[in-house]
Structure formats: structure tokens, C-alpha cells
Image (cartoon, rainbow, N blue to C red; front, top):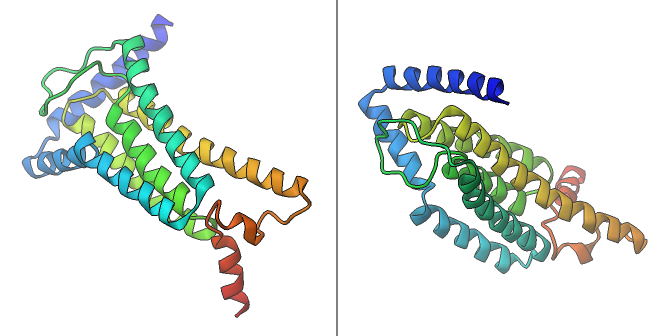
Length: 210
């Protein structure tokens, strides 16, 4: 609705002015580093390295979820940008391309940071690492507004899309695995599932009993 869009734009304008007024050279430099880290030149090598690590550990279900999460997120970036075709804010401090909504960096940082945690951890370790992943993704997203490369709503939308995909796709795979295990009359944490997903929950239990 036009009224809702006007409210969002007013918030975006307020945040944009706040970022302009608070620009400080060391923070600008730091924001550029964060932006670079989750650009394609560095983000994709990180994803490839994680993929190889999952393959070496032979966690095939985790690998499938990780690959699907990345593929869907990349499809979302281009298709939604083309559909919305929103102009970027003026005066960007870094080079930009394509339209503004959603932020591709926000999607990529959430998918990579949160997706890595979902792919290689389980149990209580997952919660601890998830907090760090969310902080990293949020810092990257906000850095894009600090550099005037995106409106606030661009990075909020992108972060929600990326985090949603990174959480729901692996969780759906895990639920499917557990249901199939129960249908076979097997414990979801039995050894035959160890090659599908890391079984840290069972390992934690063994350490507590030791």
C-alpha cells in the first residue's frame, strides 16, 4: 500500500541522514572491509571451502541443505531486485550495481554465516555459534547503510530473507531425516545417520556421562 511505503521511506530517510551525520573515517574504512568480505570475490571462496569441509566429513544431508540454501538465495537476489527495481540512496561511498532492494550483501552474509553454523554444528554448540553468526550478518548489513549503498529497509529485508533460508532449509532436511528414522523404527541419533549430519548432541551426552 502507498501509505505503508511512505512510512517505510520516512524511516529509511531518517536512518540515511543519521548514517551520513555519523560518518567517521575509521568506521567508514571498517565498513568497507566488511562489505568486501561478503562480496563475491571472498564470500564464494569461503562457501567453496565450507562445501569441501562438509564433503570431507561425509555429511551428505548437511551438504544438500547447504547447497540448496545457497542456490535459492542467489535466485532470490536477482529476481527480487528485478521485480522491485528500487533506486539506491544517493552518494554511495562504494561502487554499486543493480537495484537497491533487497541487499545482496545482507542476504549473502546471513546465508553464509548462519548457513555455516547450520551445516557443521548441532546441539548446544550450534546456539553458541549462532549468536556470533547473527552478529556478523547484522554488522555486514548495517555497514551497507553506513556506506550509503542501501536503505535500511533493503538490509532488513535482505537479512530476513537470508536468515530465513539459512534456518528453514536445513531444519526441513533434519526433520525429514528424523521422520524417516522413526518410520524405520530407528533412533534419529543412531550411527547410520552420522554420515548425514554431525551428531554433536550425542557426543555432548557422552562427555557429560564420562
